[in-house]
Length: 396
Figure 1 (cartoon, rainbow, N blue to C red):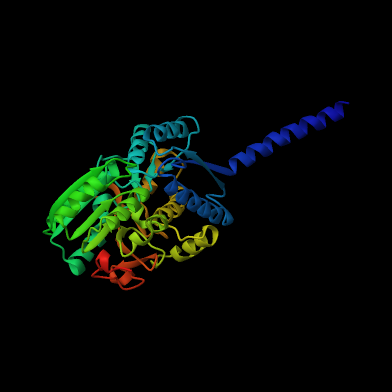
Figure 2: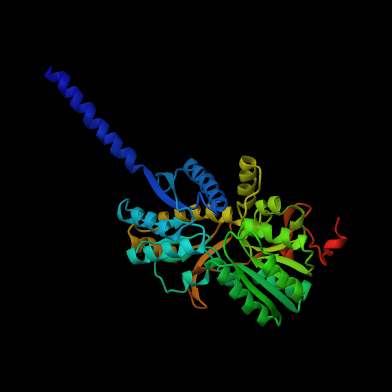
């Protein structure tokens, strides 16, 4: 009986030891994302892309020998929920690094918590300028700011379209307001007169009151800062009202994903959009990632997916270079980052009023024959742009 009891005790102790080892061999990382609500489409794109990266990383030994497990937490696109999730990840789960979220408002909420707790946070998609204008020490952003979204687009306007006037329509959110204000500055710098600048409430369905102002003003360019359903509705109502312009343009976000074309249908044709990435760009691993995503999910990913996919590889790189997984050592590793990803080059710099900000080229896409094509800059183009665009009455 004593021998049997001893065997039981040994098995129990061995089980505890094995469980401890298994726990040590797994790195669990929580990621806040909008998986329900109006931004759920973007959250799903990012979730799928994180999972692709996770599988690839685990197949090659994980992060410092630890198998990565991602735990997605639904923030519903609400900043207060994002904040609560991240407080729990830091205070209860003791997660050494934070990354994720989609919208600017939610990213700002997470950034404030991370800086307060002195835990490094990688902003993946939040674009409003002031996230990296607070002189935060622990907040790093891999995507360009709103002010830089339009650099490629402004180059296209200057060299191809050469407009004199512009109308700007935008959602009343951090992303929309910041994007609109930055476009006003860019337009004025380029010598364009802003004829209309109108905001609308998120989730609006009737844009005709503000579009009537646009039609009366007759701008050369109509520029919109919108998420996907708003973007599609705007273009459908522009077509319905036969509002002609030399160019219809989006400030990335909703205009840059396949769902825009699916929802706007023929009204999406020849619309251009600023974008941060496209499947045609020759960054290392970009095409392989895009083809894998398309094989799994039938559509090519938007730049949001490329950001998420590359973010996990960036986290891997930082954690493997850090002297330890203490906050200041991880922060030091972030600060020293200089790597090429499938999304593009990543190097965190302090300049032009920004802190820990990545700067990179931005692109222009145009909807041609029912799909997004990269048209600008010429060195990245997958096809020739279509310009001038026909008036609505001359289209089939």
